[in-house]
Image (cartoon, rainbow, N blue to C red; front, side):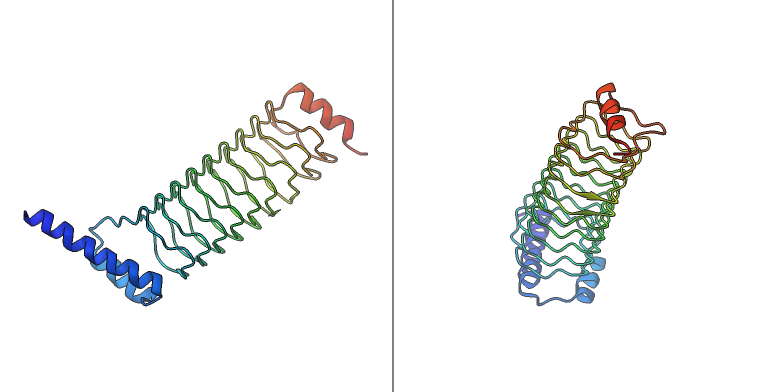
Amino acid sequence: MSDEERKTQEYDAVLGEILRRLRSGDIDIYEWDDWRKENSYEKIDFSDVDLSDTNLDEMNLSGINFSNANLSGSSLNATNFKQANLTNANLSEVNLEFAELKKANLTNANLTKAYLSNTDLEDTVLTDANLHEADLTSTNFFNSNLQRVNLNNAKYVDTNFEKANLSNANFHEAVLDCTNFTKANLTRVNFQDCNLSYLVFEGAKLNEANLDGADIRYTVLDKGCYYDDEIGEHRYELVGE
């Protein structure tokens, strides 16, 4: 066995022990931070691991590879996932309140029924992710990529989608209270049967968006908003009723 192979084997054993302690709650955030600093030159690979129903509150998990990992049901309150790879990860029913996921990759991640209140997802990739019935109260998606995301039946209060790419996203039957779509790309978005009243879409692109059955009374689609003639006519028929 070469020295490099031996070092890799030893590091894998250390990672295995760290995972065991994380699952059991036998490592606090201070010890974890110290270990990360001591091993800052190493790339942490937690792909395919099972950390379901684990308490990882306030942990620094930035830059870690969690692709295909199972974190379902875990408590991730105020956890740092900056630039982490969460591709295909199972995050269903997790608590991510006040968590930091800036520039993380959540492509095809499962966030069904996740609690994302006050979560920062700025500049995050969420293409093809599933956020069905997620709580998105005061969630920040500024400039994020949410193409083809499933957002139906999620809870929206003060949710920020400014400059986000939401093309082909599904909002079916959503009630969007105080949601910000300024300069968002909403091309071919499904807003069928949604409550969009009193929202502002200033500078947004709504080409080919589906507004069948949507309540858009008093909705502002002006000031640089790009939309099809059909959408514009629909809006102006309803304003003021």
